[in-house]
Image (cartoon, rainbow, N blue to C red; front, side, top):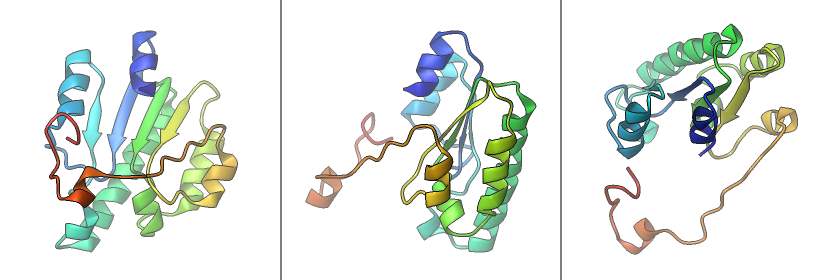
Length: 151
């Protein structure tokens, strides 16, 4: 939603997805492509299914360097770091590097970070924090993911 609002106002937006594969073609990818909003998968899928965690970690480190460069470049009004909390929790790249990047970014660059179990240091540094809490989920009732709802 945030990316759509910024793009709708003519602002430059880019999205990095830390857990999705570069070839992912979920519904959001198709729509962002139609709208001209770049979205890039940086990972190798769900980390708990990874057959090579060191490879997953290396992809996350390389992805962070791309995202960091985008943030510091000043070329974007909004940089979305989707599911960045997971590689941080796993220790795949240092939290302090993310913190210093956020502190050093150009004043007019906004960063939106998503994911569960956000480190307290990021919460303290953030201007706005929202927590979504699952009350009930179809998956827990045996209902599989449905195209257009969860992909």
